[in-house]
Image (cartoon, rainbow over all chains, first blue to last red; front, side, top):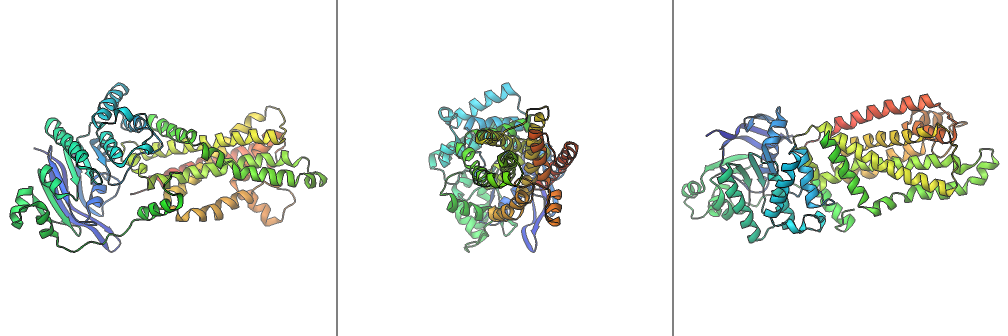
Length: 268
Length: 248
């Protein structure tokens, strides 16, 4: 089977700091691949480079056979993404958010309308689709983002901590659908998570990254075997150590805090 | 073309759905109109300047457009904060289409605010000279809107967070407004101030708008148009360039 994602010797430096340090891995088509690591390990930085929004310092990337630094449009058409942070327009309705996405991705009108209805129903937001997103709970927003990422029938789905802050019901629901999608339509899934039980259950293969380097790679059972642990969480700790990581707040994090203080949580 | 259209529509929807913003951003120009317009009216007339409300109104309309257009560009920072920017940046459309949609949407919103302010000025006693020139009023209002949407986009693309926002308002936008001919005539000024006025893009927009409403241009219609169109083109290009350099 062809590799949907192929990363060779990928490096990203911010000044003296090396966020991603000579990372190499491949994800075969149709696989569900877990990218695991503590805070600040380089997961999100890697996803940013895979998804064309950040240029690597060196190394090569192929996503669906295309280079994200040069063939951006071809790469962007190939994937759907659920970001770590919310990325919806709160002042629009769910349907308008979906519609905007469909137009940006060039989904023809008739197909767009049909798929929007199906997907919104699937994530259980059919009744609320005409409501402004700012009236949604965190879980509803997440579900809408998953639906949106699938609207243009991508070959690859990137999920950066997609289930953070969701209740077990919603998590199960979302993963069930993603597994079904992977099995029936051969969609490749690349996800990060801090919930090791989740990774153990859904990942066909996983890589553990720490301090910008991949420290282990294999199926969850291989990882457990190698570290002689009974569950993936212990294996993860065995591989990455007990130290709690400091993560520097980005400019956006700082601003979020300021925005909250400033406007008492309101949008404007 | 469709991505430009849908992003433009997005901004119009956000505008229409936020009455607080529509009314709120009229506050400042309204204060200037009432305090300066009525406060200085008698003195201005005694000095032989004519009706100050007539003189001031195009400046106040321009002010409303200026601030709204710059804010629309700076909204990129909000979109960065609330994540929507990412959604547009990973979409398979060129950055140029995205930024053109944004700037066009922002300019239309600013233009709409300008129209509302124009109506308020008419109520306050602004008398316009009905002539063919009046069609140029719309042209100049839209040029000011586009030009400053471009400037706002440059700042919105370069700034990482809102910390730099007061800096831009106090050291760029306020001076642009005060060192223009919005509040006073370009004639008989100290040389440095007169030069500042000449170098200020807003001056040409205000002069164009004032001329269109009164048939009297200080710099001349052709000059106002040429400078306005040229600078708008340059700033839209600059806005597009800086926007295309955004990395997350």
